[in-house]
Length: 432
Image (cartoon, rainbow, N blue to C red; front, side, top):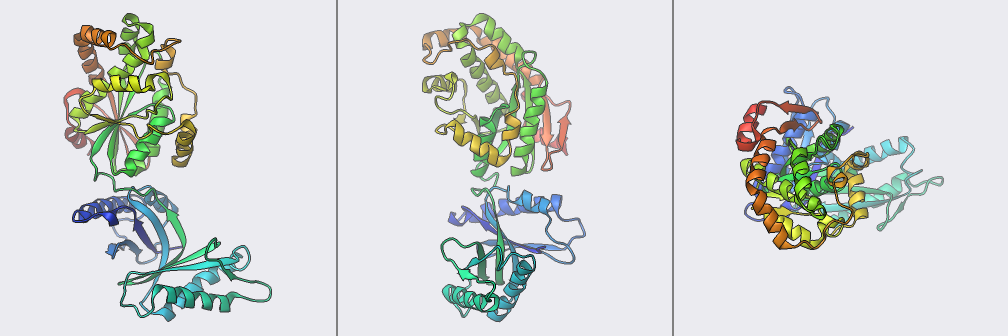
């Protein structure tokens, strides 16, 4: 039951003159989460900065609930959150409050029984306080040993691998201490690094790529190419569930579901079979590029990893990139599959991605796909089908389905919106 949270930021402290811009983005994100999960219009609370820490303090009878904590640790830019207590700038009062906390742990059968080693970690940002960091840690640790050691229970200090860490932070507004730390995803606050359009599939890779871009302060919209009638409608539901897992990393998520089966069918009929998958991906990139321009996204993001499948050889990726007028980011380019799967488990998309699904690229793929394509054939095919494919791409964008997913995972359909020639700002107006 805690009424104070101390938020430790990650890379914001490394910024210079534009640091306030990063702080303002993080502040807005935190306040929005608190309004959704914790506070009503009548709640009394305060959010403020004390040195390089961000403090959230509740007044009255409220305490921070688990849903709020789960949401806060997913905010990009937050390194850790201390569930804290606060005292005045007085060492004796600090000792009293620490004893209260440890007494509660002892009553639960933890401190002195399951927890037999501890460490005091102190940082004194407020240099006017009379005791230095080492002095506070040393004296507080000594008093804890005196109070809680007995013949039946022996408590020891372990500076290297303690079972309990007591964090003490001396700031200008008071002394904060905590025995519980929650770790966030770190990185930069969402939105400080621009906007991208992320290509999602139902697999492991693209959700992990999206997560890594969130850590770099990137705001994202999502696009999924639905290969109906070659695959069933259930795959759309699977992608929506993936977006629900990614939605908490930003204030609002937009998913564009683009009907792409007719284009894939047309390509498969007229191209060399070994080039099918390459050409599918080439026109997905071109389609995504058109949409990215309309919604003012600055780049595309994919889950490609070098050599993972035949279409992701260096030669193929370089050729596919020629279909986009904007940058394509591939944060997983050097990852192996096990590393990707481990991250998928961490962010909660593994259990969704592992569900079997049909994939048109696989169903229509040739047994021996090209890994080193001939540019003459590639250029000739694209030039001969350019006019026809431009018409088809515009049609599939016009028939796209648009959905909004909020922090809680609620999904809202956005009706009567033409994707192919409407800016994201107009879409946002329709969402209000």
